[in-house]
Image (tube, rainbow, N blue to C red; front, side, top):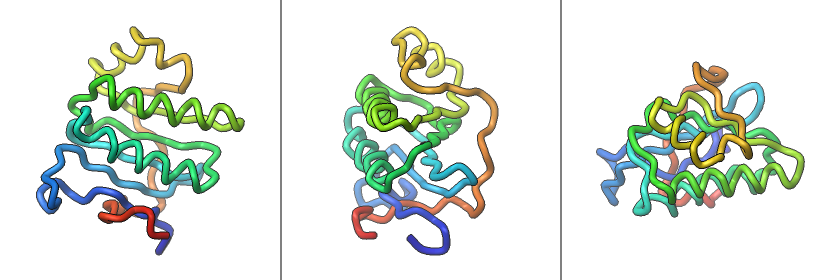
Length: 142
């Protein structure tokens, strides 16, 4: 970590060598890390998403915020990755909060029952103490 920002996993798609449609950034808030997702999360980006979430789980995080207002699309693989992280946190007494899903995603989460294993909130979440940092190509370097 440097300057209060969490290590990143994927840079802006325009700058990404993989041309990923998913942008993942991490910022620190008063309650802990906030993963900010934008673009499209599907089976082609699910490994990136899992890796970014797991990086926060291994940091002994008790409350993980995942802000998704900029997420235009999320398929079952992406939803499964977030649900897996929520279950892992819940098993150790923590929680995952999904913030600001667009209406279609919020409805899908409700239909799938995912809102039963994590908190899903509309509106804006806590403001980062510092701007989000893009994730580096190798987020495992701490």
